Image 1 (tube, rainbow, N blue to C red):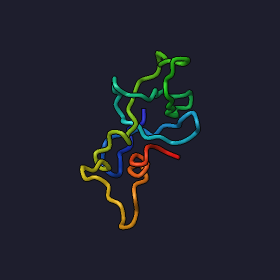
Image 2 (cartoon, rainbow, N blue to C red):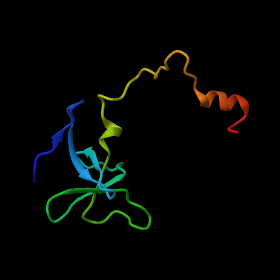
Image 3 (cartoon, rainbow, N blue to C red):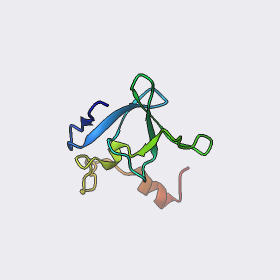
Image 4 (cartoon, rainbow, N blue to C red):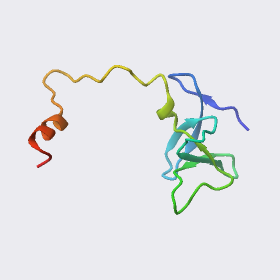
Length: 101
């Protein structure tokens, strides 16, 4: 089994998977019971990922992992995002007006 890659931001061990939509998704290298992504390998050794559903639950050969974007410590900021001068938050204005029109 190949060694996991490492996140360029936080340095954590990750695995690159291919989703059902043929996109690349980084997941934490170790399985996690609270994960929401089913990860398995195909016959060629490619890591595959998908979201388990009621119609297609977790298979015995799949393990649950967390997407790395949810656990990456390098991208999480404790500071609230700020807006440029002159840019308004439409959510606040819509809430003040009683919803979207």
